[in-house]
Each structure stands twice: as C-alpha cells, then as structure tokens.
Image 1 (cartoon, rainbow, N blue to C red):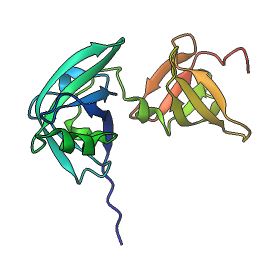
Image 2: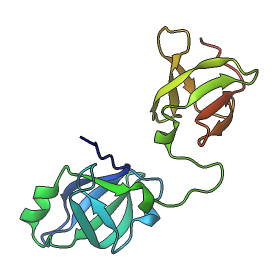
Image 3: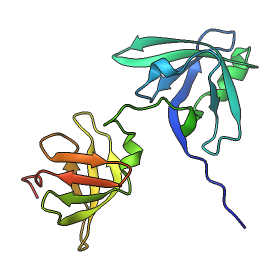
Amino acid sequence: MSQKTVDARLVGIVGKPHGIKGEVNVMLLTDYPDSIVNGCLLYLDQDCTRDILIENVYIKKSRGRETAVMRFEGISSIEEALDLRGSQLFRKKEQAPVLEDGEYWIEDLEGCMVYMENGSAVGLVEKVEVLPANDNLAVRPSGGGSIIYIPLVDEYICSIEITGKKIILKKMPEYL
C-alpha cells in the first residue's frame, strides 16, 4: 500500500460571514496576501481533495492584521457561508509564490540540522515556534536532553541552507 502525501501550506482560516450574499471574512496566515487573487484555487483540507475557487477577494487591514473578504464559487447565501466558518484554507506548495534567494518558508526549517560555525553539531530542529517578538527554533540536542530554544535572529544565526537542511549558528544563546 502506498501513501500519497501532498505538500500544502495553510493560507487562512474562514471567519464569520460578511453580509448576506455568501461572502466571508478570512484571517490570512500567509506572508504573501497579494498572491491571493480572484480565480485562485484553494483547498478546504490539507490533502488538497476539496477545492474551492475564489470568485472575488479584497484585502483589508483590521486591528493591525490583514484580513480578506472572499466570495467563493458556489457559495451565495449566508447559510452556505456559515457552513464554511472555521474551515482552514490551504494552497498547494507548487501554487505558492516563488521565493527569492535567501528567503524560505518557516516550515522548511523543521528537520534542519543545527551546527556551530566550527562544525560541531548542536541538534535537529523539531519545530519552529512563531512568537510575537521573534521566531524560535526548538532544537533537540544531538547528545540527547531537553529541547533548547534558539531565537531566529541575526545575532545567533550565521546562515540557513534549506537545500542542505543546515543551519549555522554564530553563537549559542547566553541563557543556556
């Protein structure tokens, strides 16, 4: 038995209806809200089997956060819009914007090996915690032990090589 995996990225979460004609508010979770446009195909599941087409979208700022008002093809009433509330919206990785050199998706850091500049292994990134001040790498040390948290800021990070799954540190955080 083979297992099919689809690499999908979460781009937003459907909120409450906007008006009575089937439009919904969507909290955007993408760094590229301009890439969500009319005619964009999104999915209601991470396996990308339940597609939904954006018929109309406009982006607005609400309390410092970008949100969108969307109308989806086939959704034309407030009742249908209410059924979508809480749904997660995904986009296939190949439909995502192309990143420039030196840019990466946060989830691509998971599974990277972390090294010091001198080549000594620190550990493996288990996950990235997205926090208001900065993101933190949750690293499982090579020699075992509890997770260490390394801020994802220039003070500590020398380089990130996504293709080689390698992160080089300038120094370890002082609090360790």
